[in-house]
Amino acid sequence: MEFSSWLALVTICVVGAISPGPSLAVVMRNTMRGGQYHGVLTALGHGAGVGLYALMTALGLALLIASNPLLFDAIRYGGAAFLAWLGIKALLAKPEPQGAGAENAHRVAGRQGAFEGFMVAFLNPQLAIFFVALFSQFVHANTGWQQSGIMMLTAGGIDALWYVLVALVLSRGPVLAWLKEQSIWIDRLSGMVLLALALKVVW
Image 1 (cartoon, one colour):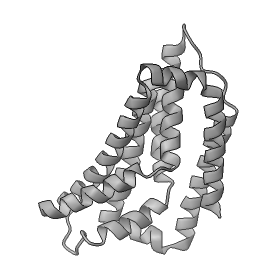
Image 2: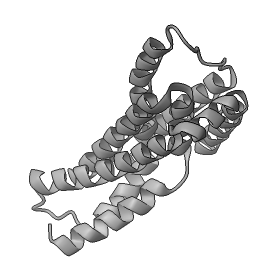
Image 3: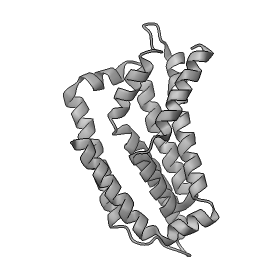
Image 4: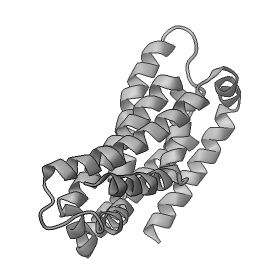
């Protein structure tokens, strides 16, 4: 891939990554609930999901998802169900543990955050549409694993770096302290946002 083409790819991936949506809500909530460790692993999990979709697209598999209504709907409804589950969990959340046992709880939450971040990305069929439209100008009949790998690392890496930055900013001293003080209300708000996004995905 030529350097100019790669820069164009980077620019579009940056714009896509910073666009607000369910991913931002999940990273913010997990950072608030579990701190920096939880938020960073959520971001890395999300980047892995985005990178997988990018690789699938570059290899021509995402085109099958986009052109197969049944498969597309299955992923779409699965994504909506997962967002709804996250929303209900946020609405029912209790204040996080403090003091003894909190560190171990955060480690478990971090692994769970990585899974949630991955699934929010992987169960979003709009990523298939986005990458088909984006990569159509870069993928050719002779596109091999090397160029596909560059696309995967670019898209997934940019996404992961952006959400890691979000998690790091939110987990700093006074910002995190304020978020924890308002944790109940932020949980309720993020829960309603996630449920609304789930309904939007379905309709």
